[in-house]
Image (tube, rainbow, N blue to C red):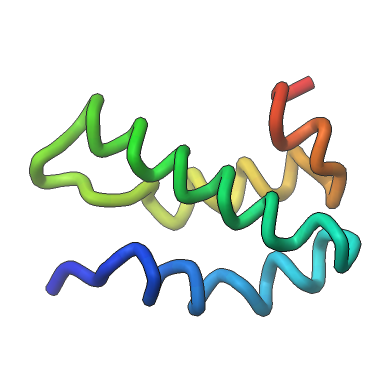
Length: 73
């Protein structure tokens, strides 16, 4: 069953709060929402969100740094 973007955001928030500074949490969640929309544009309509394994990798590589999450370096 597909879940909405707001529910996905609520589910991700505790994890993002653990990884990013408090002032960066909302921006990180906004960026993950944009990533979901881009994923859906590329792989939709069946793929509504980034797969969990891809999200895990993205967050691991960002290492709690919003700038790295944004530009991927």
